[in-house]
Length: 333
View 1 (cartoon, rainbow, N blue to C red):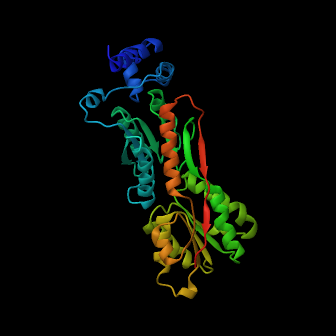
View 2 (cartoon, one colour; view 1 turned 90 degrees about the horizontal axis):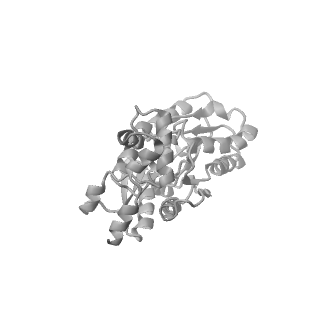
View 3 (cartoon, helix red, strand yellow; view 1 turned 135 degrees about the horizontal axis):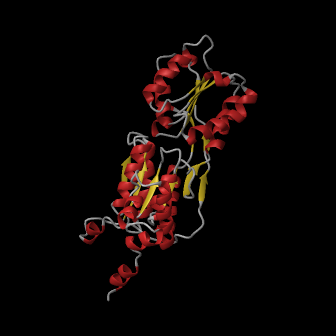
């Protein structure tokens, strides 16, 4: 018997998972596939059995056998139009290419339901690991992938209600950097144009800013605006802020696309009348325009996420690792 035959013979089967869980073969398959009409008790029993046996579902075996599927890691991003994600994908791909692996990039459009469908589809296509910039607020559903032997790594946004590796920026410290920079320059009417209120990155940055501004700039929360995930929505919110009887003397933009909308809204004002601006993330055009930003190294973030995925593939029992990457204040203008 060849080495491949021996490995195949030793690999746990779905029938063994079903037997250990005390359910039928069909029920075990449905539970591992995440089908909604399997009871939570049954699903938990099947997932526990799969985890104990180190079972990995192999629904794409025929494609692999034909050579039409390469060993790949899947990346689920939030929005293809955001340059942050293209830089992240490039860094991940650069890290895994040396090991002969490929990167498959998908887009959830910030939809938790679409993200879950994509993750299950990637698993069924025999993806080796999943790296996700998750739009979900509860990541318990990813336990089904882990039970099938598929490592899940959370990047940029931390995992909730699941034990999984992650690589994120120190957003709370980044928020403090932005707030202190403006306060030290005499600003007290500081507006924040933030991302979706449910995003952990936004909440952490806001908490960091709040720790500084609550003492130094009382009333700043009256100038807080949220759910500006793109340039158009942030532009509208900034125009609203500028129309106030006492407009802000400074504006913090929650991400690179929000920053673009902020700058667009300010473009028609004389330079002397424009509020000071601090952005999060550091797109190339921010350097050209001389905008002060708080940013982390996206290449380091991506490479760390890729390293975690590869390390988990090599050792499923290694301790869960959470990598936190610092953010820096880049003063310009």
